[in-house]
Figure 1 (cartoon, rainbow, N blue to C red):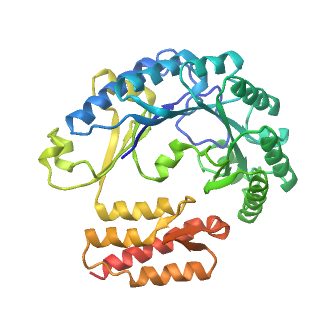
Figure 2: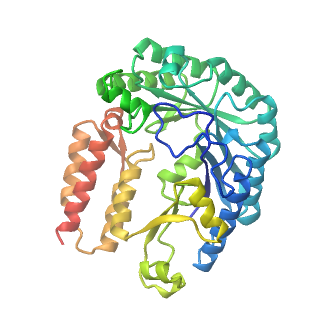
Figure 3: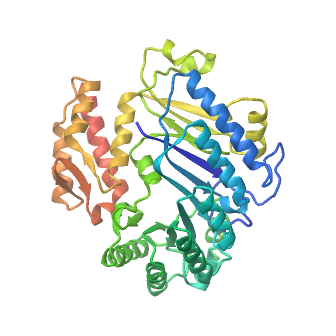
Length: 421
């Protein structure tokens, strides 16, 4: 089972109006959770996490990828990001050709900064472009200009780093021509990877309040679907192929870290609110978690998902006491893990292996009845939501646009087969 590391950096220069991520604009939140001290606390958390893994009999291979997200990781000094990466190398090792990515606000990563990242072992940088249209950037509360993005990509190219850009479609006031302009500019940058996400409005954000008060209009589902289709057409014509619903890349330039999530591999999450995931190769029980016993004392196989304390000060306080800074965790039994596998598989180009899924279901439940599942698979193919390719159910573009409904139908069919016991 491959392994990767995610590092959450919870600092931003300002909070964007649509953002509901765990981010803060203050320089210092206490207990060492400051822009200046963050690297030291994150490194301590990694050391604690590694000891926890070993105590519970988890011995991970070298990390295949490391991803710095946020927030805005590049508000930290470049040398601090490099120090954190070096500790990943010290604790777990990095596999040959490991992918090392940081997200970057185009305002916070100049040529010197990017060169320092490259010298420190980074291989990839993902720029938060969002849009090429000034009035859309203003609606999103973004302060950078399109020229900043172009400058960053050029600097990354000069240092041998791969570049990706993130786009957001569906912002209030964004026309179809505005969106076309953003997509075409992103393609003209010559990057080999682009992420395009539909704007999701969260009620507690500034934008959510503006929409609730009638100041601006909410995103329209039909408008977002039209923009998705336009982007897919333009990306495909330029040689970028979709590999996950919101991600396109030239062959060989897919984000290995993101694919790790969709393939449900193991990862350690570092930083306030970060999630960790360990697969069922590990013996685990709730009792062993609560009383500190070794996982080897348990007889059940589970997946474990855990998440760190959200507030940076409380997170850092737990680390300073020498504790794993988890807010909570959950143990997922084998049946639920298979259902999760269905949900993930239907988001990626690789698709979902139906024959293998039925096999795994029967391993966990001999009485599993796949009659209804096969019926639903046939229906979604007839409805052009998916195709069957070498026993793998792969979503069509229509299936991508209706992915939540498609997943719900396949999951319900699996649950029906389990309920027939």
